[in-house]
Length: 353
Image (cartoon, rainbow, N blue to C red; front, side):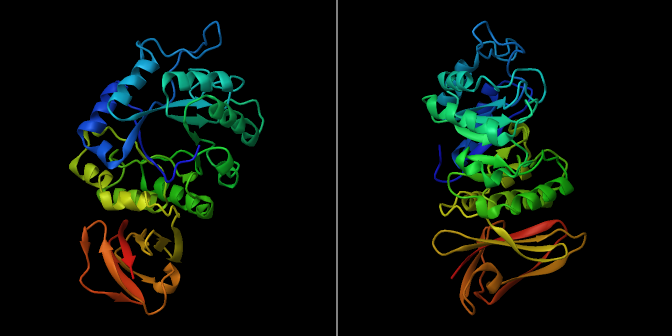
């Protein structure tokens, strides 16, 4: 049930058909960048199971059923994700959960051609997630089809500590909102568990809000940058059919995506903080280091990354690639790197000795 490194996801909880969502991911070029999943969220099924206990796709929202949708999505070279819950009902209480039906539902998902399962944690029997989630893990492994298992336990029982044996990613936070304070607080909560992320299992601070309008361009760049260095699943949460040029430039930054997808699979950490000024860093393949300088303060300020903080040998000279300016800096840097950064903005670099 493990992938070599984190995949990219497109979450489409939007009021149009998922076939159109798949078309948009292809037509915008996002699929070529690695955004391969179209994920259905809550409310996709009827409130009652059929007489054999099977989940029934909503007759109005999915008149042709889920398998027909999966076939269409697969024909586009994409993958289809679906949603369920480790409780009796899902969070919206408009469809059944999978508690007590894990094996039956896993077989149903596999028969439809599902590739990804988001598994929520509402309306339960009161037992611990550490008891309920592994039941679905075993069911998926017996279902006869590889299905990525995304645990949406909201971080309540520290799933980073046990999620590697249960799923492929685990939510470390409660739901994100489209504003600066929500975004940075999710980043902070997720960073605490950096040491537990590795190829096959990833910390998930919730989906990307890039393009939804609650933050400005610089703040969305910080958002995307932190998620990338954190090796978090990159789940698009906006309507890509009418996304702005700025939004597409952020979501489509191939150099930043490459950091997220780096084969070494090590999540970056905050290595130095001075009030609202932060240095994030982590190793990449081929002896490189990614460095993120983030200014969370209300004013422009200067931030310095020191080699002894970011894991480079003292006095080593490095070349520096600016991933948002898409240029290699002319000067080689020794001992440290300093940049002046606007409020709620960042600089993201790859350093190579």
